[in-house]
Length: 303
Image (cartoon, rainbow, N blue to C red; front, side, top):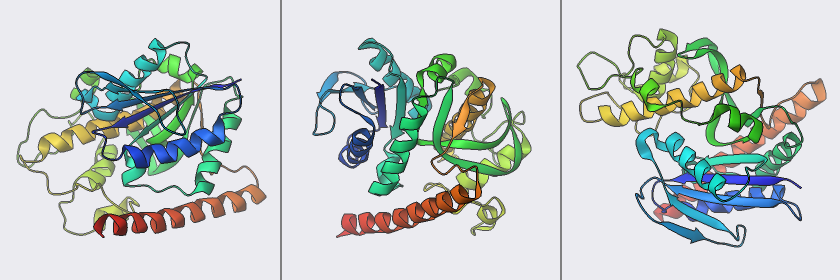
């Protein structure tokens, strides 16, 4: 018997149905007869009240008010507390945000791949962190240590061994505030000088578009940029500052996991020639399906 804790982060419930459709299919891939499944939806737009949530996939869920001080990371921590308040800690935690419905589209095959890998990892007693992995162009020094790659946090999983060691997914607002400036000044970026130059250049290429072209994205291998990327100004500084704190939280989560001895795994990992070919095809087909499904969703919204 395995227990699973789903913690989904949203800001308002506009995209809840699409998000929970994906998570419901993932739950169906994972849960077996007798397994326990807890779902907590954290709404960072809510400040009070708790309400029940129920659908065909999740027959016992809860919607709770969030904590937007570090956006999804502080919200997920509120969700963890809500799950733990209901009983024993799950064996496996699955975290997501509504980006899973906005900027990503999952085929049934992709969901099956994620579910299969999470199920396999659920048997591993050592600490592990699982999700789609992105890599830096070269080893990059984050504020907590060097990093070659990191787990994308729009949908990721870990076991309770790692969750307990981390204590919180957010590294803490005091640390984050020490790494970004408090206010806008012309000619000055978002990050403080204490953050490594290579890391600042890499993240800023995704957050800020001040060249009017895609030269930064090409340099750092971005296939896209943040949907709000624009020239840094006094009008958007606060939003960019908060997003920069989230980028720091995301990359430092992988650093913290490694420092705690975690195995970091992806659904596309391979260790021999046959597996490299098979997993490469899985990656390509999943990305092609994502482009197709996102195009179809955008057309549906505009029609």
